[in-house]
Length: 138
Image (cartoon, rainbow, N blue to C red; front, top):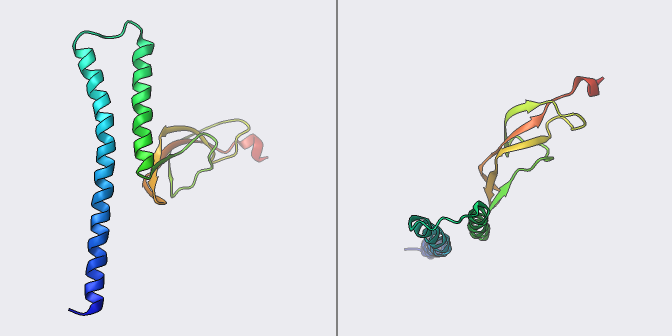
């Protein structure tokens, strides 16, 4: 075995170990989110549904924020917001509507957020955009 082959094999092994460690760390963090859902499920199965629906929504909101934090720490970033200019490499246009005073191909509504990691789009954002307003074009 040559020195270059040994070096390449060692680097590949280190990358694999690093990926495994990153995955283990992500899963450890997700376990905490699963624990929160499990506590909520057990609480509601015992007939202890909060009399105030706002309390239940608040609990879901906290768990959702916890999940968003975990995935952001893992490098998964959401994108897509009203006012964004559409980049067809990152956005999928599912409809266009008239929207006075808004530039053509500007996001008016986000139907599903997009997600990326390390600059690579994992899922494009599905959006509704402003269509060209003939009055503004003249």
